[in-house]
Image (cartoon, rainbow, N blue to C red; front, side, top):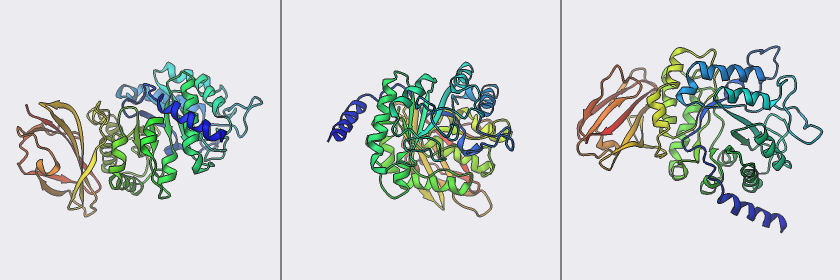
Length: 411
């Protein structure tokens, strides 16, 4: 009975207290997991192991290569940063060999660069890689993260009972709030429910978390990315109502610049993550990324779509000849009519840029004066054109690629 009453008290307290002022647009930054996983052998992987060296180098590159200026502000350590045991006072501690100066020193370095600092932990007894979890230590760990200057915390869901997620994540969020430090709170529990066929309670998640992983981990392949976007399209009616300023659906990290995506597929991920109002969390070796992939990640027009102040998640409108058409209402609003970002995403593999003909009214645009059309990946090569809603609009889309437009109402 006591636990039940305590849980109810937590729910009431935290449901009224989440407004921590952060993540008003989808978080942007860099996260270690997808590219660097749990590489801890610094002899074999001196430049890639999860270590102080990796994160300082990445912080330097985020600033010097223009990522921070473009909006990528969070640098987030994922799993495998810990010692296998807590210290003599029961507090979390980093691996002393790989992080010889401690976490607070690293955090100060990252903050001095103008970046924000993020970390990973797990609600269960262990992290997914087998390091100490926060279960049984929620309050002391929340205080530790605040003392270290953490601005973003991802809490995974391994080694925990599914039935405990709601109360446990709520309680930890309460302790984060009590620290007085504004910390973006990323919750992973829906990924564990949805992957097993159980619907998550997104109405409640939107009250206690700033973002949440919805489904399975993204892997470094087009197939993995494509499955995730298919799942989001299939489940969009359940997801869209709960996305908005301060609380976002999260389809997982950007693969752009790694090994698994072609250039066209990289454009596809960037466009669809913008449509989905998804967090833009790079996971790539910024010292080795190709120039074309870097250009995709730094595309200011597409970042502006992702960061649109309205915070409305877009949706799959229709599929024509196996080409999906995704649309998102955005600013500016002209004479009461939204602008729109529209992505034509090819699920075809037949070897040439397939042409489809649509009208703007076919994809839900209705402004009678027409729209100014901007190609977001080729704004310099293709001058904006005006288009009436009833005019035929031919789009040629490369296999597994995307053509991405902004449609602005003409006054």
